[in-house]
Length: 398
Length: 165
Image (tube, rainbow over all chains, first blue to last red; front, side, top):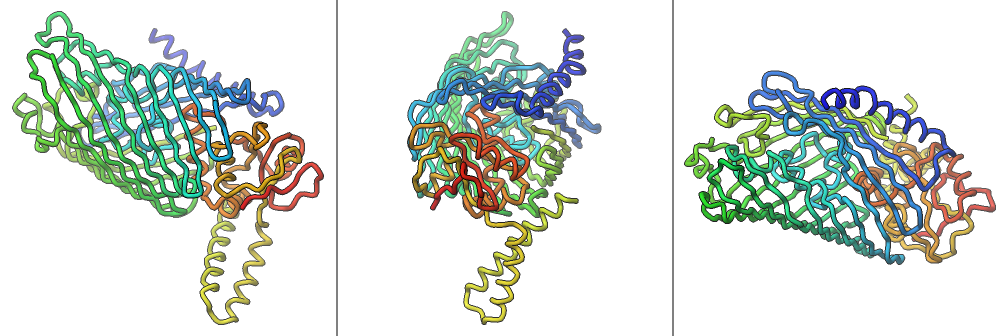
């Protein structure tokens, strides 16, 4: 299997990409109804303490690679078929496999000069906040690391895509454009990071998701100069303990409500998102039934010095439990107190070398470890509360 | 080098329009004459772009938000029910920048954001990007139900201006 991975990575993938790109270039051969796009991103990380995407502590980790290739085809005017394959390698969390990121049949049911209604079926991206649907595409993200208080990387598989159906409606007026999405489907997530994020590092059973819904209302003024959105999700995960565990087969529900606002000026940009998340744990036996609220928010400001050079500053914070902002409950359970929060100041610079190539770098000063991946930091007691993160990213798209 | 020049031109153009705005705020006449002179130079660099359609497209007057909806792919059909085919130029092409700002009253990065979200989330298709205005002229002339933009009014019987207010 390892050999296959290696072969796939080193030979097959560049070959496929190269082939598709060369075919695309030969205009005329490619039918107009079929479109191909893709991206390749490599990021490097260095941290003063704690590990992100591999061994970044006192070294440089090339642990984050993202390669995507998508096709879309319109067999009929009202039907669009599209699919995207995603290869992602992220430290010890994600060993690097190719997955179907989305595979969608989109049927347009109703269309006027002022709006449309449609349905989608298949594997669908989850609408959540401003960045979730394209979270793995570097060009669409403001920074290398998305604000982790909201766009967790460790439990991302719950948020990326779901197998099911979606209803959408758009209404365009002279006062702005409204969009509505409602998704119902099975989230993809059941991995160790989700387990560790929910029940802590010491359990060994399995989580399984049940059908969940996600919905979003979006209002944009002046073609996206001002954007306002509200997103809500309802996720339930059922736990099956392993044989030697004393914990029972309980369940956890997670219900995040997210408010988003963004200003996109010619040069200046301002973004803020606020998340209020209800968490419920029940029937775990040794863990008493409990409910608590997680709060996270960030404010981000960007400035375009030229159309190709952009600077960005952001403050991002999360409190895992708003009734225990200092982390005392964690300490009582033998965990470091800084596991319950994270406050992250960052500055970054983005250079769009051409419309296909982008290079950027950023620096983070972080207080707390709430969003550190367990797989990259096996021993919680060795993590540090105050740490620095440096990142560099090169991305290509077509 | 060429790319850098394009950028400079666009930035210049922006500064000139800013000057024009200031001139509207009732300054004395001399600077106005000077500014108009400067603007005429800038116009010679990038002509005002016009939205154009293939002759098959029905005659009607489109509002600004309806025209935006066509280019952001939210409106996909003409009033007669035919599927719209949208053509654009590269993001850093001077005509694209002029078109986005003056015909859509948006910024190129806003359109890019909308298109990227569609392409990379499986929400449909985006406009076909062409290399030059010559190619744009040829595509609009030969593709029924197509829309695009040009910086010179076309002298081609298969193409006409699109009315957008």
